[in-house]
Image (cartoon, rainbow, N blue to C red; front, side):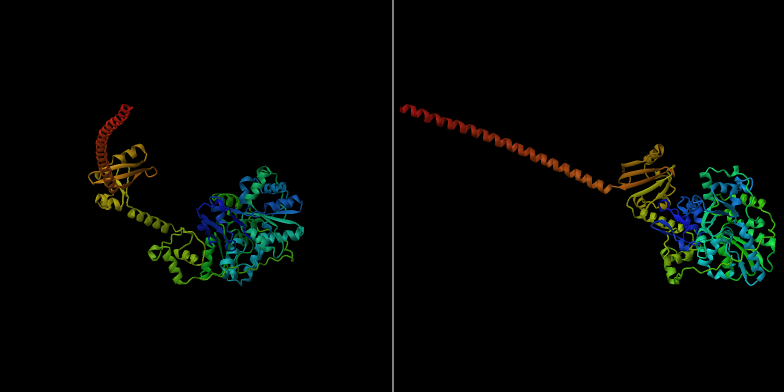
Length: 575
């Protein structure tokens, strides 16, 4: 079961979750982060890191509300971290209990009741002394990490269920199997634990977080600070209430019977836990009782605690002030029907390790074919460039997040474009000092870039247009400029770059085009002159022909008239 989900539409190319995920359970496909549920240990770091709120926690809130509407016996199992999460809104611990009753819960109990029995289970392992190292199993994310990525650590894991599961067992035994148990805490992994433990029996029916509880209280207009004091149901767990802070389990054991031959150590944060496992693998840690937590500071700083990073110090202080340092006395033994033993299973994937040749080939593709280019900066989320290359060889879908490689790639591409473009590229600062001078400019002005950079532009040519751009803070586009000194005719675009307060000149050499254009103009003029001469000559010829035709026509008319008249008059004489 997945306990977190992704809103694809909100994922905006930052890939912060990819970089921060300690086990790289987030891949990138189609430029979007994708969550891989069976690789995730549910530490929740991506949930708190995402700046776009694209990662969400899959909630059981609707299920809990449904139980209340159905008027079932519904019990809130309140994680020990509640003191840190709600301490700023409470005058006493009884107020949060009253708020939960007002929401409709029939019983409010503290998960730390079960922690008393978990502490005793850890102590039995200490007294037995058969384990080389004992690692606590109260943190579900650490348990997930072991089963998926460090199965060789299973022999060191205390075979004891978490306080949440133990409390669910206790409440079902006490209030009946039909009672609905709703665990409320700050952990993203508890939901998956609740589902997995149902294979053994339905112990926890729904899991809520402190953020959801705050929203629910606000929705129902319940102000915790105005709630009345409600006495505690069940036993006072006393020092076991420190399970929510780093070192709390160690404090509870120390207050009761101590650690015997074992040294004590607590490790918080998933990265530190991974480092711990590597040390154990090397044989550097032996005869040690280790409290392991995936969250820095413990559950009071869980991803769903609803506070900010600075709150965890205040939460720890408040928790320490409210918790008695005594171990509860005269606590009844747990029912023989309840079994706290936990069995770990290896769930890791069998992923083939690539060959050295494949790794080196992938490094070469990433532009890291030498040790000098493998900076191991960690910007991509992997500790080393080699680790990333291995992941790519294992067909993990990743986006190119190598910042040095992308920078070099972008820089080399820009240099290629500047070197091959036929246009002259000149960038100057506000003092008209040359900042950039490409190959085409070197050739045209017959000066190397090394010498030109830092030179004032007006030493090469009239820079009045560039001065005008800086005065007006406005670009000049498609202006035709002729440099007689260099025999150049150009079309210039001088672009003002406001962010850097500089000007980029893109100068296109159109000298050859202008020469051809002028030749065409000259040819057109010559053609027009020839045409005009032909026209004039044709007009003269036409006029001469017209004149001759006119004279001939007149003579013909006279002759024919005379012929007509002579014929006419001759006929009259004969009559």
